[in-house]
Every structure is written in structure tokens, then in C-alpha cells.
Image (tube, rainbow, N blue to C red; front, side, top):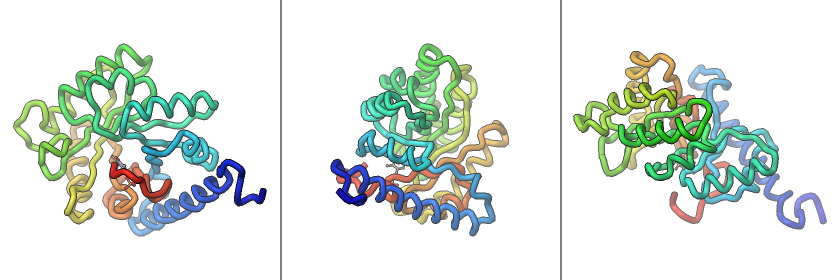
Length: 249
Ligand SMILES: *Cc1c(COP(=O)(O)O)cnc(C)c1O
């Protein structure tokens, strides 16, 4: 056995992840330099959906501290496996969240990025109150194109369940939740600079009312440079780190 071909492929996978991580880190560093920002202002979240817990353990072993998942069932299993291995990472829930999954998510998640309705905020608050001994950090997910079918709270929307201000107020009012900031995905067909520029404006508006809501979760494998240029504090990187997924999610 050479160093490149461990019997179970672990050595090769570690080398692949190490090389990918170096590439992503240098992209983040270059984007911070270009924006005149300190590298320490940006947290990279490794989005491990569809990849096994063994990859999370390898990533943790090479210095990744933050991991993202978008489905509760998959995330809960992986979080348990990683914890059983004695490894601590911060878990980010970044996907669409159903109210009946809140009870599970509050047990392992450190930051939920995807609260986009007053009803979901209420369900998460109840679950966090019962299932945690400290408040859960929450981001309000914003639908930048205003299309209700695509998810996300919408700025100025008169819908009492979906308006951005109403959702933010509902999170901020819950003792078991802490409003930490905003999250968005660039809408299909929008130039990233347009999407993340709008997100920066909306985030600034929210900070005027909630000064502690400083997180801007924006930017993925394809557009993290633009997001960092517009103030992202957290980038969510999947395929550039772990490889292309066979399913589109
Ligand atoms: C999958 C996913 C990502 C990562 O996407 P990549 O393009 O693979 O980097 C980021 N954010 C969310 C919400 C996701 O579902």
C-alpha cells in the first residue's frame, strides 16, 4: 500500500479534500483581499449533504470547524456519528425546514439559516425551549426575488406570515431563539452582484433595528467571491470542497 492508496480509500480522500480545501481557502482569502476585508471576518461552512460522516471527520481533521446540512434525517444521523467519534464541529442547518422537524433539528444544530415564516419561527421557538438548555441562533432566510414558491421571507410583503420584518420580529421576540442575521441564495438568472448587493442592503436595514444581527450567510461554490465582496460573514461551500453531487440539491 502506498500513501496514495489506503485500503479503504481514506488516504486518497483525505488528500483530495486537503487540496480542495486549500483551493477554496485561497479563493476566500483573495476575495477578502479584493474587498479590503480581514480573512477572519469570513467563516467557511462545508456543506456535506449527500456525503458521508467519514468525510465530515476527515474535514474536521484538516481544520474545518463548521459543517452544513439541508435535510434533517441525513443531518441528525451524521451529527450523531461525528459526535460518537468524539469530534466536535458546529452544525449549520441550511435547508428548507418543515415544522415537524424542528424538534429534531434543535438537538444538534448550532445555527439554523432558513427561518422564513412566522409560523416556522414559532415552531422552532417551542422546540428550542423544550429541547435545549441555551438559545438557538437563527438567521432569517430572505427570498430576494420575492417569489413565494421559492421560499424565503420577503421584504415589504404584506403577508403576515412571510414579511421579512414580521419574521425577524417573531424570532427576536422568542426567548429560546437569538436573531443572528440573514441568509440568502442568489436567485436563478440573477447576476450574483445584484443578489448580494440587495441582500447587503436588507441586512443593513435589519441591523438598524437589531444591532446584534450581524451574520450574512451568502455565497456558495460558484459565487462566493461576489458574496464576500458584498459583506458575507459566512459562505456555504459544497461541491468545490467535496465534489460534484450526483443529485441536484
Ligand atoms: C447545497 C447548498 C449549498 C452548497 O452549494 P454548492 O454549490 O455545492 O457549493 C449552499 N447553500 C445551500 C442552502 C445549499 O442547499
